[in-house]
Length: 428
Ligand SMILES: Cc1ncc(COP(=O)(O)O)c(C=O)c1O
Image (cartoon, rainbow, N blue to C red; front, side, top):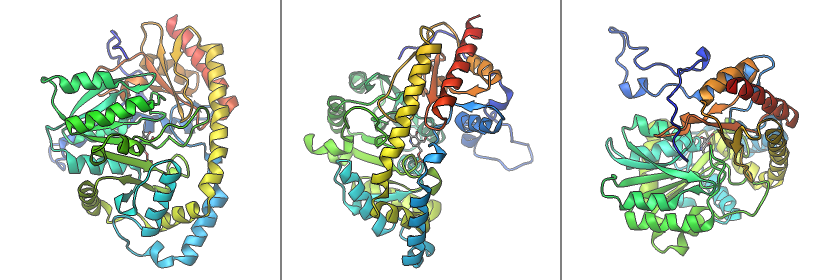
């Protein structure tokens, strides 16, 4: 990724501006921790509110297609959970998560090629919470962490609030550039990171997947330079083309000693339903215990009802049965987006084409900002996410993310055509 020479534009769409710093500090009012005044609201969440504007097509949010929720399967699982295990559903439960669910998570991970024990698992209320717990337990203000450039906005915001120095590592079509990582680690002027956050498969936003060789090199570097790899994998099972690549966590035996340096964040948000808020992390014992204690301070535990529902859903084999339905629908939607890009954006925006996940990542060919493009796109009634928000530093204002999971193929075709009109207007 290279840095665009163009300056940050003034946001031109009033309803999608971030909350300005200091906005709510009245001299006499509560004195809010300044860290929370400066992060702004997530632009993606603000854009998702635009979905309610009549006629608007959203290519913005990473929301699962709602008609793809396995409503019958989830209802049956919820019913079985409450009927057969009412106390586990309704009583306070262990902070680590219900033992039955932790067993099923281990089975699920083994079908994905990774061996973990129930004792390694901490159930979390979303992998977003998992990352927050890790940052709180591993990092103090002033410590350094590494992230991809670009990366998912959630971790960027968590690191900012924690006062952590964020160092970015470039990404290309094969994900994290491990050679750039190595030179940063070897550079005595660059602070040593305690943690590196990476989405190795169908990354948000780049859509890129790291090949095995890069994953092995990453493990070797973590071992040598003693930083924790946080592997975030919400999209890995949403493959609609190509061969699966093992988790980083599945490769630890090939780099002896690296097991102690890998945390895996898994989530059912994108494959069952984000509203259940059931996810997990696996971590070496001392770190998992620290994260468990941090979670105890937050919420005591995840709701037993949703945990037991997910356990019953997995135990009934519903996820295995339903995943191909989701992946099949995303295959069609991605193909519709690829075709529409070829028709309406060829020569104007260069895109990566992923083999799974939810996102296509593009870069304008001309010297324009996608913030300005967004303003024109909203006039055409289509939304996307300007790419600059995904950068911890050196934002590239020519980049953008399109999501294909939620709209139908026809809406995708129309949405990309509208973006094509907006790009034409922008270019004059
Ligand atoms: C890379 C990545 N990690 C984590 C999340 C959040 O997942 P969860 O719903 O499990 O908190 C998202 C959501 O968009 C994501 O893109």
